Length: 297
Image (cartoon, rainbow, N blue to C red):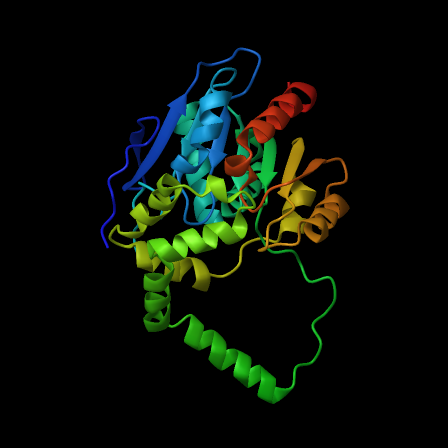
């Protein structure tokens, strides 16, 4: 298979970060009374995934979107990929390119990276929006003793799964356009939102040199700081949007955990899947605008 060359809705630019090429886009004009918005995509996605949001939000905001290192049109070096790496990338981008604190909005993996930044580099943020955000919580109870046979089986299974040979073939399977489309239809409630362009936007970066190494690293790197610890450090207003139809995470259960550690958050449950910002963009944009006006400005 070959990737079809698709032009981004908004032509972006490249920024050199630690000798790596980073792609980003900017839209809208600076607002004297509103901080800029910085949009951060999820695993396997890119700035393209925010095109519907940028088109509307740019009318009232200065909007930025960035491809995390390892994804989209950004470089894909053979390094260890962690939340701390993306936190530092985002922090440096805000300091060097945007030039002022921002409201962060992140989906899935991008939500976790945004939370790391807003909690651990608070001077770079004014507010935080999490959309079906990923990230590990601390264990609520100490782990029970595991049968030695089961423990050995888990160890062997883990080593097989994270073996480079195994993950190489898993990556080749998952990156097929037909598989991408089937996966999207599982995580989008509205299948009309699963367009050829969306499939192409996700497929295209998988053809880049180094993409398979990124895939292997993300699933084999150590987990970062736990979400509950980060929430207890967060000094900014927090908006959480949940697509209730997300099969990858139990929104109600995770929402309860977020409220436990950050009870003053604002929260919405939406009729959408894992990516409500792309599936129901008008609703998400409306909520973001109302929340910024009420809680951030």
